Length: 183
Image (cartoon, rainbow, N blue to C red; front, side):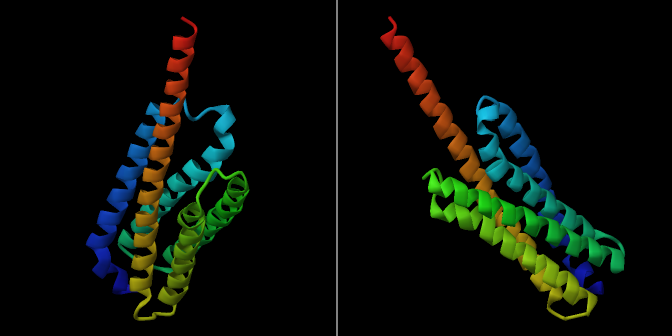
């Protein structure tokens, strides 16, 4: 399994990017704290929490790939991360279908928040199994899966922030209108 050592810089870049994006997401959430209320719990669980989980998975998988040795424990950790992430993606997809009935999300969100992350985690699981069996292209499959996860969740984080800004802007407009009408 020495094939992952050739990917050192790639996983260093991906892991660092994921860590920075998790930190930025925490900052953005703390700035938009008024949006994340008890009333929005279902939306937070459906959209925000999975993005943090997926960025964290990219960080974890990158750390596993950067480990000095890659034994069976590393492979089981990769497969385990893939299984947990796939579970999160399946639950997220089912929650998004609930929101789609309310007309609150676009069809693309089902792919970006649910199905694409699920496919990426299936790739992580498959690459863990293939790495164990010393398949030549297993490192490329893992790299493509983790990169897909990072890129789709950059899109998702952007979508989240736009949603928060739009909602906050709408609240502020209503507050200004209420103040103006009460004068």
